[in-house]
View 1: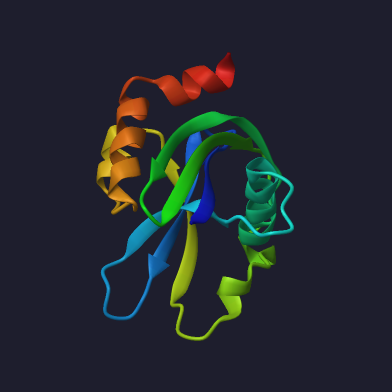
View 2: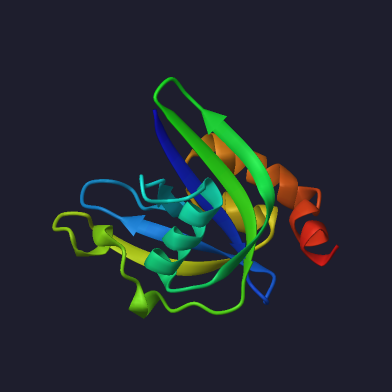
Amino acid sequence: MQHRVRAVLLTPNDTMLLIKRIRPGIDPYWVIVGGKIEPTDVSPEEALLREVREEIAGEAEIVSLLHTIETADERQDFYLATIKKWSFEDRTGPEFSQEGRGEYLLEEIPLTADALDAVNLLPQDFAAVLREAVERGELLATRRS
């Protein structure tokens, strides 16, 4: 079973960072920063921090586990994390240099239901969970407590 970790990254501007994917022949979609756990990762949390460093050259602080989606062949853990600085230009993830992968654009999205509804966030199961948490004000409340 493949194990992936993802970070809902809250910025000091009370926005979240999402990666917009543009691939030939597919409508644009957005994903949450993260990736698969490597054999050298000590824990899922360490894997997540590594992925944040690779994908956006940032240092995140994990707040809590938000949600898990598990299927027969994959588990995805979604964490809430905060981030103060990042540099998309300094990313180092191997996927960015592979031919045919399309474009990756980092975007700050307001923490509102309307903003989430305006993007095609994948996976859709988690997008619904995230939208509900945003509507209830849970993300910012967790961050400030």
